[in-house]
Length: 219
Image (cartoon, rainbow, N blue to C red; front, side, top):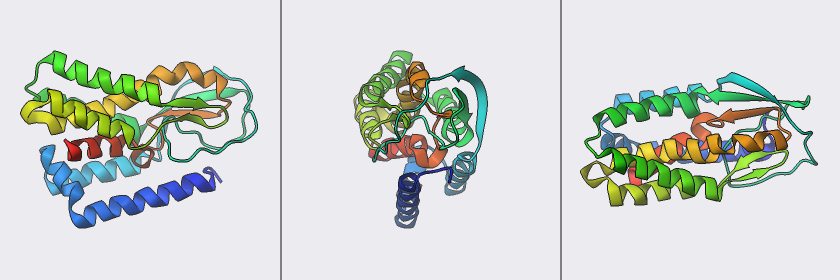
């Protein structure tokens, strides 16, 4: 199996949570705050969901062999697929968890009427926080609490975002997590003993999409 039972259980739980969000309209509220119609919001959601299965390899590095297998609950970050380890780690970019959220963040940034220092401060704060609460786990990858970054992004956006706090929360929650928990942790990849490190993780259900949406909902 490409995923451990723990990851499958987390996937099912998050899928059920998102389904509940749709049923009670929370996703619609979040999409509306981001200036999206229900149809556009669902297109973003479905694109992230479908793209979560696509990892685009960008590099390959030598890595140390993995230690004894470990399991960690309640975290996400650089996704680890359980493939045979051959002494090398493929670094990939996830379509649904990195490319699509980044492109949408750039779209939001183009429409933000905020001073650039406010945007940089929001993204930088969430990146620093994400880096601080994430940790490398040999044989597993980079893990972090799932709800901490979106809450941090929402709080920062409330302080800096003025009338545009929801778009700023999405941008900070998305780019901050990618920078702090993924990009700034790439140096740990060689010591993790994982065959694949995917920037953006498992896409929608690995937290990047959820981080942005929950942050926008809370802001």
